[in-house]
Image 1 (cartoon, rainbow, N blue to C red):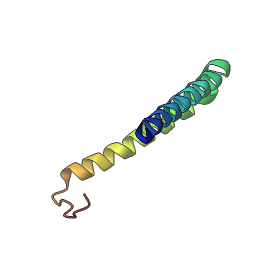
Image 2 (image 1 turned 180 degrees about the horizontal axis):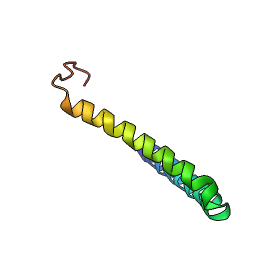
Image 3 (image 1 turned 180 degrees about the vertical axis):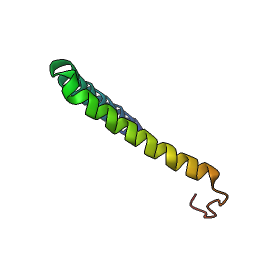
Image 4 (image 1 turned 90 degrees about the horizontal axis):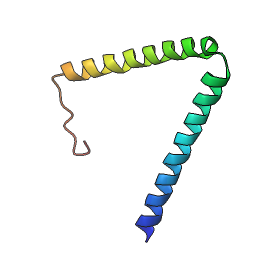
Length: 71
């Protein structure tokens, strides 16, 4: 029963976050001007993607592996 309640709580929290995110997108990009928020958001997403991609490349080119029982 505890696993059922935990699973249901997780689903409810995820659904609430999705609804909050959609509400934010609708409120920001559809109601407000797209040029006011869209260009800075796209720039931020491009920088974040570039940063994650660089970290991915550095990790992929690494010859050392983590030798820990926790990983």
